[in-house]
Length: 248
Image: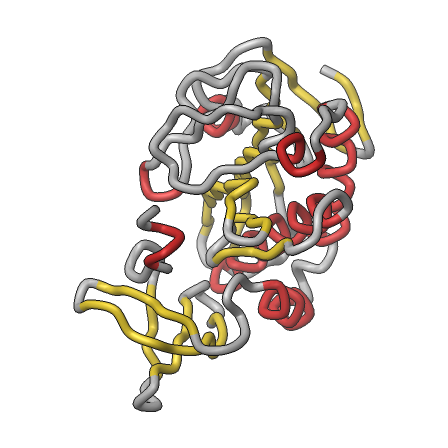
């Protein structure tokens, strides 16, 4: 265990899942406690997907945040802060960075980071958020069926020190996290960073494909799309897709 930029780091040579370990140790982890694994064998992504990460090549970690006086209805502020912080870090190394709703980070049309957030709510307040972040740093070969992975190393043509990248990532996330009690500012920056956030794009739901623009994201984190007939469509996670990217 050691301190890094105001975070308490709990580092392990191997874990099945940093989110699972953080949940197991939830009673011990302080605010800004971070569970880090050099090798993760059963990493989880959104919607039950698996997160592929080659041992020692990438960042796989879970940050425990214990927000004060954040209503449960504003919990998406945590997701926006972590996604924007991760995007801010990636943007130091690559252009074309965006946040793909709800909280993946993309470089152009390729996924470089995935985020899985699990909340604990007590009464009407959010008391604990476990924020799992997987960032592809030095991995150059991907064997899963994920259609579009990329890493910093593939973009830059060289390897990067993972400790240096992790330090920068924690700092970037912390800067955004300090804004969680100002959700309007976070939402403004989040919408400005959204993948396919401007112009008309093709989307797909369980009824088929359609063209729409991104109208926004509401306080519950639902995506609002305005289709060509002027109707606003409201979606939860996994209810709508970007066909060319999500389907491979």
